[in-house]
Image (cartoon, rainbow, N blue to C red; front, side, top):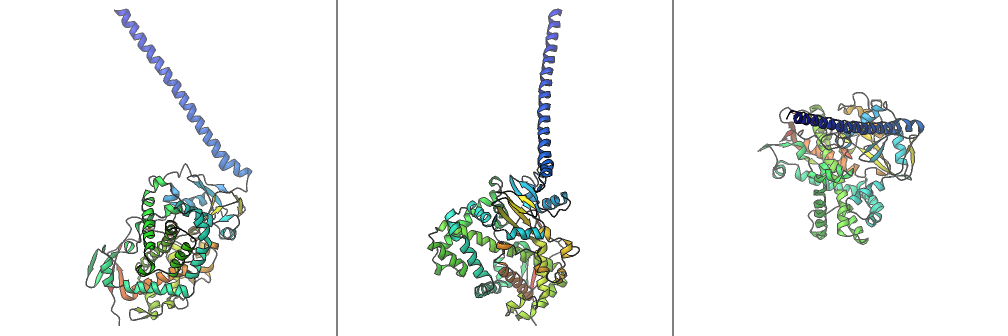
Amino acid sequence: MAPLSNLTTVLDAADVALINSRLGQVSLGLTKFVAFLLAALIGWRLWKFTICPFLHPSYSKEFFSWVLYMLSDGADPIFFSDANGLLSTARKYFNNTTKPFALTVLGMTFYVVTQAKHSAEVYKNTETLSFEDFVQGLMTTNGNNDEVMKSLGVLVQKMQIHQLYPSQSLSTLQERVQCWIDNNLNLSALRHTCFYADSQGEAHIELPLYQWSAFLEFDEVIWKMLYQYPSFLSHDMSKPRPRIIVALKRYFKIPRDKRANGATWLINSREDEAKALGIDDDNFAIVLFHLYFAINTNTRKTVFWLLTYLVHNPSLLESYRQETGPAFSGQDLVYPLYIQDPANCPQVDAIWHETLRLSGWSASVRLIKENTIIGGKLMSRGNRVLVPHRLLHFDESIFGENTHAFRPERWQKENLARSPPWRLFRGGKTMCSGQFLARFSVTTFVATLLRRFNIEKVGNPSFPQADEGRPVLGIMPIKEGHDFNVRLLPREMT
């Protein structure tokens, strides 16, 4: 029995040795494979970010971000969770360069332009840089066909200018806005519509300010549509979008004379032209869908931020109230254009601009149709140029010291609102045609509110933090959980 036992022991040892040998071979092979991948990665990294820029100095340097910044905030790539932080970090990485640089997000390359004179080159170039192609790509994503875009493209822009730039058409629209504010900004109307009020009595109502300024929930995620966020990560946007378009389609099926409150000249003219061109209801609803959100998304958030800065700065609130007082007779606004004149209301004008400077995440995007040189750097066809104006709004050489503080007095600097770095509403062919209506709506609403009510914070809430990470095209939302309550108490007019 002993020899058999010894044989078994020998065989077991041999098996173990064989297994160890095989494992060693596998481990060696895996090590070689990993080493090969690392070598390939290092080689690619050296070529793309070191050797190639050295050999081709005219190329824009690319920020090496995919390892450090691939994922942030769960499944969101950092461009969509902290876009402003990423752009600031990238510029610092290149020693605060004034030259354009590049970064790639989800396979899409953006050339980032951060200097005012280079952004002017972008806006002047209408031959090889296209905003229309960017918008048409967005409209195609939402369901419009090529024929619709060709038929309505230029016409729609001309209509918007006709209605929304200073003219009798704009005055008519402003009168409707003022009428709506007058009818809805009273305690009775607020009690009826603000079902979410936390508290209300005979002489007061308490409201969460951001919710009071809210639009549709879809508006909080519309940025995913603008930046063509991957569909598998944007169900909260892609699911409600068709429902909104269907609702608009149903509205335009109602005979015009039976629609509640009617529609503006701009909407009616678009509808007439669409019918004349043979555009069907589905495509027309999509066209109006873009206008609907463009009009509403930034105005309501600007109201929130302007009121937030005022209630946290009582002296400025009182200054705003006093300056706009001559436009009223009792509680009624009788001279609405008085508020729009900076000569009459310089403090209102400064507060307006400072609110936009701090709360705006304005950016311009262009599609590169042909290889183009901007700021001395070559930008390749098929990619995009991004001009993030928010970075310019914190330049101390332009806006003075302490640029992260709310200081309306900085706008006393002559022509600051017309300086090239200040482009919240300006940018070549993409100048916002709704800027005059937006300012009228916001400043009129706030002036009427302060005339009719005393407004105060409930408790001692901290100042709400803006969600700077989301790359919205306009005014930033707040971070979740940062809403705060305000108390409105009717004022007694003497």
